[in-house]
Length: 325
Ligand SMILES: Nc1ncnc2c1ncn2[C@@H]1O[C@H](COP(=O)(O)OP(=O)(O)O)[C@@H](O)[C@H]1O
Ligand SMILES: [Mg+2]
Image (cartoon, rainbow, N blue to C red; front, side, top):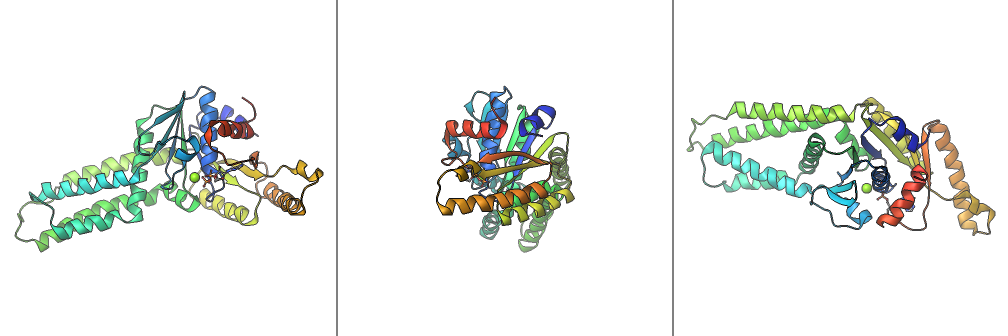
């Protein structure tokens, strides 16, 4: 089975993800796959859920926080501005407090709490997740390619149950906060009860959104998840572990792509001992990969002469992954 065939054979798998440790080539493969699909006439959105996003670098276009930006016909790229979203959350919370208590201004201690909460990593992740849900629920593209964060974090997005819990925590936390504040500032309109209905409605709304997006992520018919590996011991070990974990979360795995393979023909040429050793080591670990992921390897991509940035290199990479098109 090849990568191109998988896409041909499963046209309903419209949510595409590449998983793997940092630096293995997830962003590169996301960009090249999107490019390939766009060239085949599909309307594609590749978006980054990585706070250290690098779609801007690979496409050599400043797209950060600008929404879906057209790169070539049919190919749109988006980098999520999590900070902006967190600021919106903060404003939302301030507004809620002002409305509920009929205040003119947020008291200092509450403001410092709001500031502290925004600095928590969970807040950023939740903001990114929220934006992803927006993107997916909104629709309008044939394919969605997720430029994922490294493995551990990717699990966060994929195990939606925990995300849902985080959301409930956020809302009940807000409720708790209100109550505490109520006690502290007894002077202020005590009779104004929390609008329980509004909170419940918000909770149900969020639940519905999460069900929609997690339904997509764990749906074998709609999702293709690929692991990126390289011929190195630690990477292989981590990947095996991660695959087991993903199986537990019922994330459907489509297969493995080997990246950065040094062409073994080089061996026949007069090359330094150093490079010869690298190739020998690689051959060993390619054997291990073959054994571990038997029958699930979809492509083997060579180490290129230079890093992959700009459309010319992306085109080269797409051809290395999918063959000529
Ligand atoms: N096959 C390859 N040949 C040469 N450079 C590569 C190759 N694959 C990835 N790279 C480079 O490696 C670096 C890390 O790749 P990237 O896709 O950003 O990894 P990740 O998103 O998994 O962290 C980038 O500079 C990229 O251009
Ligand atoms: Mg990346």
